[in-house]
Length: 186
Length: 186
Image 1 (cartoon, rainbow over the protein chains, first blue to last red):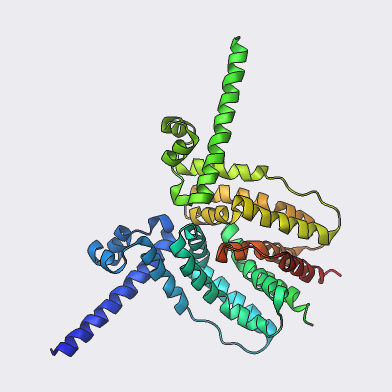
Image 2 (image 1 turned 60 degrees about the vertical axis):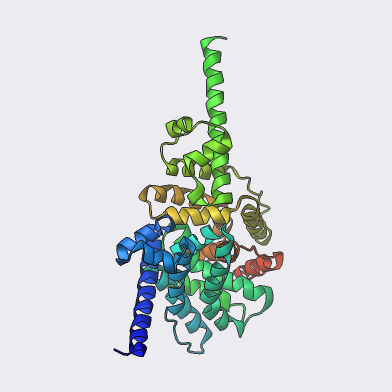
């Protein structure tokens, strides 16, 4: 094996390790809570040594940031151009994220960590990214205070029951929310 | 001092201790995060022995539940009977709770603890209680899926920016949200 091939193999291994650690950290975070997100726990589950983890992710916040980066890779729906369809699709997809990836717990963990200065930037980035598709759909029809209100209101339809009661809204609740909002344009 | 007076004094002392511990636990929870909410930390700040704390609040969850009980004592606004005024007042008062008592962090901590079975009941109770005034205002005008949607949407106007970005909505955003909702009745 040439030096170049050796480096490629090592690079691939590093990438696999990074991705494996990030996925494990996200799983620990959402299934066991943020208290459980430690180097020891991730090392145990992912099957790496704690030394390896500390070398790449010196702090628990680094582990958390790695976990959260995965969320940026979640697929988003294609837009149809019809405002009502796109909004319902977007909220349904957010609801799916809560069910499949426990986005509500991720949101709660990030809010908790907001007492730690270094996490503010990560939280800001992830949440801005997370709200971007919804905001993009709405920006053509609304602006100013009304736009800000609607972004929070529609996020709230899914986020509030999840965060407050561990439940998700039914289809008819999502549809009712979208129709309330659309009444102001039609 | 008679036995009766002695008992009364002891009862008063227990009540004072309970209230002091609950207030300290809430302060630790909102200012230092849920990881910091330990018997040692509360004992240190409130000036009680850890033994006393463990005797009355055997687990960290008991401390958390005591802290959360204080939230039920927060004052709520008197209703005027005008739907718009009452909704704006209610959301403004929720926003005040976020600013003064960091209700967003309390919400996040409870969502985090939802991975722990015993906390579900506490969370359910606190959040149901917290949403009751808003729900009471809306119930005269809305029902079914639309009522559920609006309760979440209006909670979301304050909760979402607080939980996601550590900010609270301006007056004009709160007013815009209420007006969007009222358009469906007028």
